[in-house]
Length: 391
Image (cartoon, rainbow, N blue to C red; front, side, top):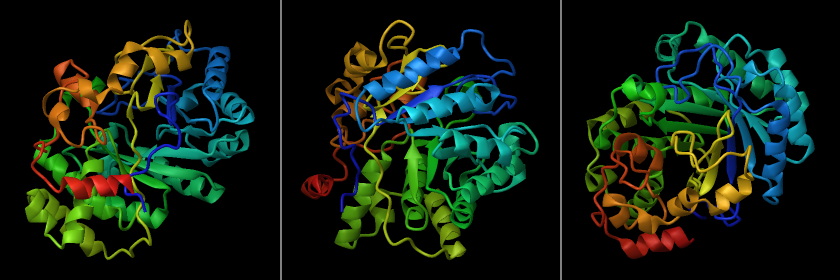
């Protein structure tokens, strides 16, 4: 079994996933919001016709079509959402929707999404209680709306991904979130390690050693729920390190220098006494510009939604041309251009670091990921790592 999944096609030719920010309008005021969402829609948003053309450009990238995720802001703030989902489905796009937890997120709206052809729903859960989650979302009742929608989506047969933004506010609550994911059911639980952009610039950052502890906890959680990460590409390194250490019968805590946060998270996870999954879900080898592309509400094309560096605009240029040929995208796919520890790291072709976090904290998308604690060459076992990655 491969421990790291790779797309079946050349990610220099077409992406694995396309995220479209349909609008920045959203009634919430979440503390970490990348989009710095506002109550009203921007008059410069892509029109319905432009959005349809974008979908057709994505299909033209070639089969099988990339996953097309409609996000925001809150996509439900667009009255043409159902029409767009239907159009995408009719032309062969696998369409998913990532709504905000608001009063528009009802069973009725999910029924309409399902009828229009949506295949999956992505929901954010940043705390296992209303107190934790609603404080982070800066709006009361968001927790209830989100959990009710989660249950309804599962009953309707929609696949559900649960995203958790990991910051200081919920570090010790992560095991309880895992419990909820297990109990309510989800296709994927993704731990999103904060990128300090948008409103997230005002939040206190994590220390690299804390991130390392969290990534090893997510690995452990993967024995009980289908766990992965977002903007924490070094999770792929952790997966291979843990496999090597397990095969050697070595203690990963001491070998990797894990700290008290990991010990506490693991203790809380063990206390849940959850049944183990038969197989783990390997992480996907995708990074900004390498299998991933983001299109803003105004049509700007970014390597990631958290990397506000435009490579072009779909109003004047085809998405495929931008993705395949723009200097920004081709440059980010060249790991030889990475700097600092990322450039020197033996895991750079597998990981590559968060280009978004590098840009947010240094202004240089090729800089090292400042929230990675790994020192190049310190793990060793290079032949075993190579053999695992080749499986």
